Image (cartoon, rainbow, N blue to C red; front, side):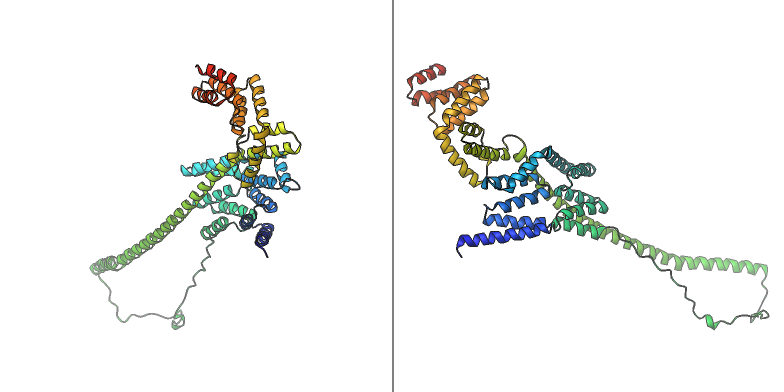
Length: 438
């Protein structure tokens, strides 16, 4: 078995494992297998499409779009990614809903950082209400409820995550905390039975029985008073020397036990707080990553998704033999935002073709924009033309004139000087000298 075939077999094995785990709703395990599959074979569009579906199911729409766009560039025809992207485009307000959910998640994290946990939970409730499968928001809700010891609500959020991803590690960990710390029913104490001892040793008295003391002497009045006083003193001594010390000792023992119990509970609470703080920091980091990823994907025309779509538009224009449309789309392309090496290779080939045939069209587009009064669009077209063909002297002259009109004298003078020193067109050099002020 040759090396390439071994790689294909390994990639297919990881894909099959990921597919089986996805069928069992083990989304985390499936995503790990699919990432390993793409590590061995990045051209496997089925794995990319499935990974995008898993991201979408977990509420990560931005990551899902990246996978589907890359898949579409790798396989132009008969690709399920076309169906997924078209389905998202048909759903009106999908991206607006996604942005709102991410914004609310970010606001909740800010509230948590400032200590406003109630406001954070309100924001998270709105986020999961609009997007129930947003796993990160559900996990943060569970974490805050655990901190507030609202284990019932935390359990609901954790169960929602586990219904989406059966083996999500964080959700399983939070579930163990809820089980361990949740309220437990206390068994009822059985009433103690009275024990009667030596009952059979006593004889039941009859009606005619009389108890006669061994000796009897009638006390006088003074003796009765003395006996009462002696009894009171004896009772006070018993209370002072026997009863009170025993009660004091029992109270002190109970107090010490209570203090020890509270100390242990406080120690456990501090440990849980430290652990939850670490989890919160991890979620905050994930939030920043998600925010940056989503912003770079969907915010404006310079987003990553827009650049991939521009490349697709250029290729479709080539397919229709509509070269002017391809040039027009290329004028707005920013290749630096595209990370895929395969797409960059396609852009290199497009740039070569544009350098040979695209400059006149770009210059013509710039002229039309100037006639329409859109100097910024004209400037972009002229600069793109100069980028493709540095010796486009007419485009440089027009660019310099626009810079001069924008009061950007440094850029304008640099271009005028380049024309004067290097252009062989004497008429154009003379115009440049005039504009330069020589």
